[in-house]
Image (cartoon, rainbow, N blue to C red; front, side, top):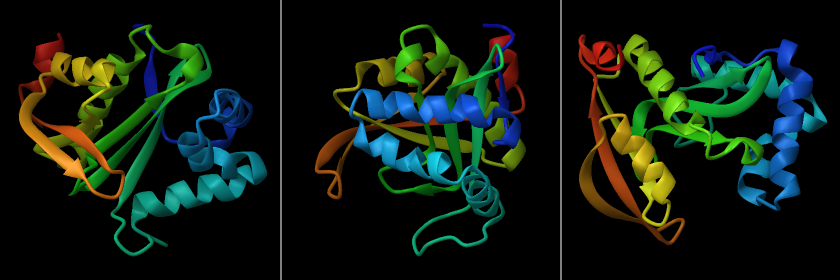
Length: 178
């Protein structure tokens, strides 16, 4: 796990990322497959969209600047994290997912830990995260990364209850992991 790193999406990982997207199709997860489907249709356009979103260009109404990073292990994309530069109600600052083929191996903790380091560089001092109240794995990952439960909220759009967490990022934040 020590060789894991986050990288901005790039052409070098085209095949790996396309395989990543297909893992969601394989398990019939329409939510994530639809999020990544464009990478299968036109990878360069997909990368261009991600780059534009990270710069605040071509955002749809209600969207905020979002930096996307891929979690790489042994030259393979095993996870994706999106860091929103402003909190979004019911979604917070950070959203991440791990390939269905790579779950329950510690990648969730690592991707969030690395994303928090990126959030500091972006200038976020307090990260807000949410997870479905039935997603026990995500709840544990957030808590293991020093997430403090703020309470529960109801997401009307998704018709589900969510836990809402806060992680305060300070200059000594990174020393917690040393």
